[in-house]
Amino acid sequence: MEAELHPSVETSVVSGGYTVAGIFVGHKIHTENFDVQILKKVLLCFAILGTGISYLVYFGRPAKVLQNQQQSETRPLVKTITVSSHNEPFVIEMDGNANSLRTTTVAAQVNGQIKRRPSNARSGMFVQEGDILFEVDDTNYRLELEHLEAQLNQTDEETASVEVDIINTSELITLAKEDARLQKKHLNRMTDAFARKSASETDVESALRQEISTRNALQTLLNTKRSGQQMLKQMAATRQLVTARIKQAQVNLERCRVQAPVSGTIVDDIAEQGDYIRDGDELVHISDSSQIEVRCSLQADDLVWVLRKASASAASTEAMLADPLANPIPCDVTYEFGGAEFLWQGSLSRFEGTGIDRDTRTFPCRVTVAEPDSYRVNKRQKRNLSIAPILSSGMFVTVKLPISGLGKLLRVPANAVRPGENVWAVRDGIMQVISVNILESTDDYMLIESDESGVRESDQLVISPLISARDGMEVREESLQ
Image 1 (cartoon, rainbow, N blue to C red):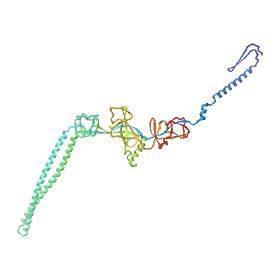
Image 2 (image 1 turned 60 degrees about the vertical axis):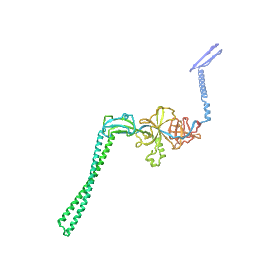
Image 3 (image 1 turned 120 degrees about the vertical axis):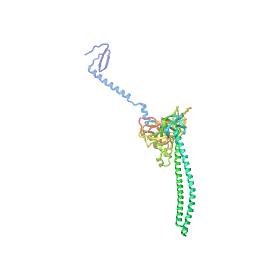
Image 4 (image 1 turned 90 degrees about the horizontal axis):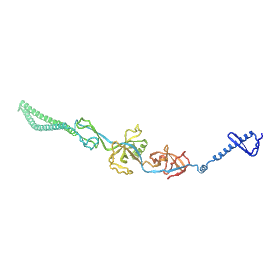
């Protein structure tokens, strides 16, 4: 088929979303429909291929900056800091509860009615040793004392009477002995006369009877004297018994005035004026504040350093095993008051109980403060306080136990310690992962022991983060010190 000639002809063929436009001016176009479709498909294929090649060339090239970095250096850059020595003692802190050295129970020692109670002997009042707390009616005890004193006087008079009897009997014994000597001579004469036939047998028997009677009288006087002497001993024993009862009565009379056995604060009021009390009844409780004991507990890790500190001053291993704290370890007891920190000098004196606490898995111990009234204020806190606390029972305090002289300690920044208590040390450009034993930790630094950790003074420790870190990895250092 032929087409007519026109000045302007526009033919458009659309296939698959693409348009091929042909503008012919002053010519005749004669083509087949099948050839046009093949041409369009070939052109579409070349267009898609060219577009893919263009994207590959443009976006497939590696960045010039990364290529330069990889070519220049492949080792990671880390920030390091130098390990320094720590010459000051490290401090073990424990929370504790202050308690009085003892709480004494004052009980009645006599029976009777409370006649008077001073106004300064009530709950909350501080009393000195020997102050009067109660006065019990002592009428019965005074009468008993008077009765015993009278009985003692009677015993003394009876003793004097027996002594007089003994003296009199002694004089009679002297006369009886003289009489017996004379009768003995008379009997001898009568016996001689009877031998010479100068006296009769009746005369001899009469002389003998008189001699026996004289000896009998003498023996009676001797027996009377011995009885008097024995009576003196009995009277002496009676006097001792009465004297002892008098002393007991005097003690009971003194016990009617109940005195404070120790200096301290009265805790509570149990008995009042007018009450009838019996021997053994509780009257008041007095808290002895002359010394303060702080109850606290040591963690197992801290106990190791305390025992090492104690063993350094122990005389021998046997003494250490018998009493680990035979030489108390000095420490400070602190309390916050009015925005200032007050400190008392104390000493870790003993362990409490038989060992580890089953509930907390800690080791109970006692810290003794010998002078609760003597304190000092932390010098770093410049505060002028007109009042100051007295270390007393019930305070929640902090015990700071300094440990020193146990080897060389190193100070490591807190951000240099990794999870699992490891540090990354850089030596000659090689990173080493070292496990450490942390003695004390704060927000800024941690203390480790040089011998056990393997970290040495002047080592460089990595403080910057790393995505991947391993032992033996090569790194570049950027030291901050």
